[in-house]
Image (cartoon, helix red, strand yellow):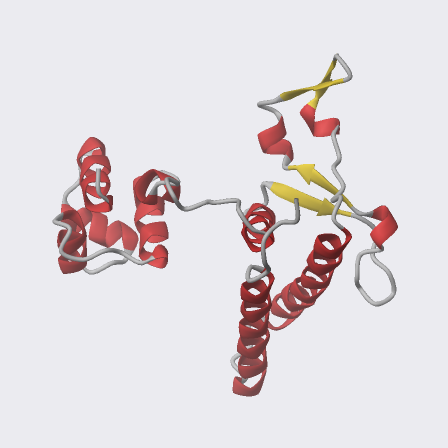
Length: 196
């Protein structure tokens, strides 16, 4: 099925018209029609809006086939960033005076909602997956993730503090910070092949 086929299928299963999907998603009806007839492909932001309107995950529309590969360190970093940003993997640890996580205290845990569906077998013993904590083996990946997390945390603190402002200078700085974080994420994903 194409993306358009999936949108049409899900929309008809809900029993709504293209116009109703347009209203629910905030996307122009002509665009919905073009998506469903494969004359235009929705971007990720439109897929998210349509998925929300249809009550499904964006993966139900865009699929995961060929979207995730793990051949390089950059591929791994991209997957790791996605897992953290979607809150499937949670970074836990104590913060230092500089607002960065103290490396010795950092663990990675599966989101409690997700872990309720899994049990883990550790040395032949069943354990609740929620009680598991993971650490990264690669020091350079670990350091890069901690640097990214510190910058992202600072941005989120600022966004919480100034999120309701209309002051253009603050909005400009926030946009610059967001662009800087996106540039860092792209750079992290450029790294070469995973050493064997």
